[in-house]
Length: 273
Image 1 (spheres, rainbow, N blue to C red):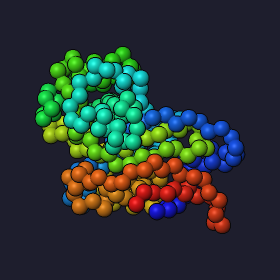
Image 2 (cartoon, rainbow, N blue to C red):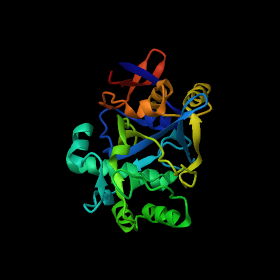
Image 3 (cartoon, rainbow, N blue to C red):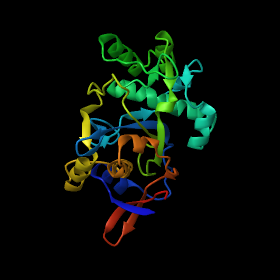
């Protein structure tokens, strides 16, 4: 299915400067997580608005997440749920990369919004990570003085890979100087935990009804890039948070292409059916 999107203001400068034939930047592997829950008027999703000083996608509404870090490959990482070999099949990649992507998803959401998808056993989840000690652990992950493996080992926890569902795969357009090869996951915030707004990379962090966010985007009040628009549309269409997380959509890599049309430039993307 072909979709066309307006060229967002945050992309326009780089799109205008792009010349075919130029060597594109190498995409950096990344992972992001859509936390969803049932709300009074439909599904809600936890969103961040990136601060205006960010080099990539400033003032843009995004899901919590970020790039893979070398420490995500730490072989000591305690693991429960589907093994990295099974995730490699799901993600259509090698086992080492799959392990890093799942670890990055868990680490990033803990750093950015204080949700830890880990537990003392393969069938339990740590109930409360809101105290000062856990804030310090998040800070040390952020400054890279600790790896996720070190945090989990120190607290006798295992990463719960079964709490993540794979939803989408998008690669930043070739004209962007900073590019990401991003896997999109879905999850619920574990009982006893809460997503917070402590991230220094966002000036807004909160739950929002998916339909309200789409309407704000249509009005021009909320800026979203094509991957986020498509994912939020899918959230809005789901009958429940549990149903959305349980879905197993067909996933294929999508790279929006800057395309000139009679009405001007658009971002054209071929989406998996």
